[in-house]
Each structure stands twice: as structure tokens, then as C-alpha cells.
Length: 446
Image (cartoon, rainbow, N blue to C red; front, side):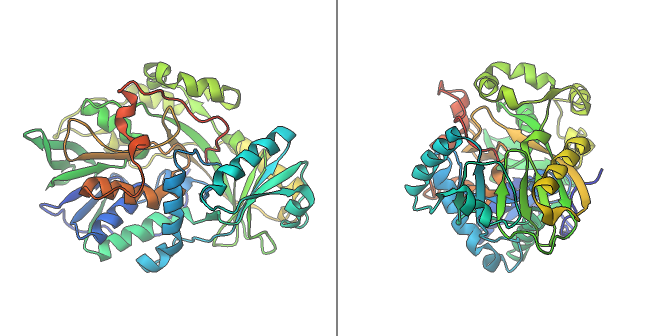
């Protein structure tokens, strides 16, 4: 089943012989880093094995939220929100960004207590989140009937359009003199005297002094071929989009069984945690110890299965050279099978609670693969022992909103500039230096 329809990006015709930086991966993290680097005057080539934004960067919920963030991410998300607000003007394109506000419904007294703590945490950053009583919260969505105690509302939270954002930013990279190469998998990174000196793609070699790997769920496999450890797994979530709903709400709402986010086409993206699943693979066993704290925290809501990903992982090559065809060429666009049964049940719950949606129909279903790390925060980091190699990955289901900030931090690290936020929480070496690795309890993963 094809994924969301993307705005087009026209690839550049020829590979450059040499650039300053090669960015591997055309998702939101990769294109935002490429934009930052190009704006600093560096020559950049972005190589994408499939199409720009075609995997999770176009399949996510489209939220740009400050609320319910891991405290370790908050400084980066504050910067990212600032960048989102000026991004359309900066690139001369349309990302669909709007500061529409997000309402997080609270079903129990315990939920309200957790939300009060979240509001206090956000207040440290002058974020205007607040707790609303039930009547005031639902008044923002006329006709919506939910069994809740209260809600947390944050007017600073927003949304953008996943099918538009990464392509628009990639085109801006090209306008700044960078090049974009789709259907062009990077096979290996070459080094000279231990330092990055080139990448070999399926279409030829590009000399460079730095490489940023922003490969989403593929990052572990790429690094493993280089002998570099990244404890990354993937989960799958289903979403749907509706036909236009002219009288639908402007704001975004999250309830225990569904979420609603208005789209620029007048329809809505509807999603929910109940559609998520985790397919067991050999990496599940290899990384069991690393993910044990996460499993203890999340097991009640985790639906484990055997499926297509299990079989594909068993047959995926884990070692290759510059002259070999790679798994990235075998799977240009990862397109998981959506869970239509659960999605329909979720949509039925929307219609039962919100009459304005009762005449809406499903325009499309899709699923996306989400890259997850054991502590559920990303890696944005140099790779120790390989000068010139950097990684930006593992956003664990909340990377779309973080994209611009992550791109700025990655560019700071690549260029040696003062980092926009403290990069220590995002260092790759935390998984091997004896640091305590655990997720924050109660953090929303979208």
C-alpha cells in the first residue's frame, strides 16, 4: 500500500566530485541539517536511497509540540519551535506550519497530577501551557463528547504538514547550491589516515571531509557495517487521513484512543497509540539487555508480533563492501502494512465522540516505521574514533517537531561551532561509556 503523496523534489543530474559534507538520508533530520550547512556556506550533497521524506518523515502525526517532552529534549525543542516559526519565510516554501495549539485530555486524577508537573516543567521555559477544566477544554471543540477530568492546553504547540515539509526544505538546499540525489544509496564511508575522506554511492564516489548519517531506522544497519554500535530498534504505527471536514476544529486534540490533527487539504490525520506494533527481529534478541528498562516501562502498551519485518530482517545482509549491492538498494522506501482493522476502530471512536466527523470518509491509510533508542531520546553526535563522521538518528517517534533544532545542532557539531544546546545528552558514546540509560516515565512519544 503506497504511503502519503509527497510534494515532488527533482534530483540533481550528476554527483559532485567533491563537497564539504555528505548528508545520508533525506528525512526531516537530514534535510534540516543540510539546510543549516548550506546556509553557512558549505558545499553539501544529500543522498537519499529512495525519495526525500518518503519514510517516517511523511508518515508521522505532523505535531510540532513542546508539551510532554523529555526534559533532556526541552532546550532543543524550544530552539526547534523558534526555527519552525520562521521556516517558511526562510526557505520561501510551504511546510504547512501553524501554531494551532494542542489539547491533551486527562482521564483521571493521576493524569491531572502528571499534567500539573508537566506544566510546571514547561513554565521554566516560559511555555504557556495550562490545565483547563473539562467544560472549558471541550468548548474548544464544539460537539466533542469525551469522558475526561480535565485537559492540558498549550497554545504554543503547533503542527506542520509531513508530506510538504522535508521536500520544501530539500528544494531550499538546492537553491543554496547544495545537491540532492534520490534513488542514490550510500554504500560505504571511506577514510584516509582514519579520517572521513569520501562516500561511495551506488552511482559513484563523492570526496568529502565530513559525513552526517541521518538514516532513520536504517542507521543501525549502516553503522554496524562499519563496526560502530548503535542500539536501535523499530516500531510500526498506523495513521489515516480523512476527506475534508469543513466544520472541523482548528486545534489538535489527543484522547486516549485517538488524536486529530487538521491538514492543509482540509482533512484530518487521525492516529493513536492503539495502532502501534512491534515485530520481533534478530536485533530484538541482540539488544534485549539494552532495551530492558524501556520494556519494563512500556510493556503494558506494547503489542509484539511476528510478521513481514521478522522475515525481512532474517534475510537482510549485515556486511557489504563498496562494490556490493546493499539492503538500502533492495528497499528503496520502507512501506509497512497498515493495521486497517485497528484504524477503522479508531475512526469509529472519533465519529461516536465527534458528530462533525460522521460524514467524513477515509481517504488513505498508511503505516510508518519509527526508530527507537533505549532512552527514547535521539543521538546527535560525532562518532568517537572516526573523525569527520556524525550521526543524527533515533528520534523515537518525536523527531518531526525536533527536525529544525536537530539540524542546527548537527550543523554546529559538523562545523565546530558553539552548539546551540548542550549536546551531551545526545552523545552516541552514552551507550558505551557506562552511563545509566533509561527512558523518562510518562513521556509522550509523538
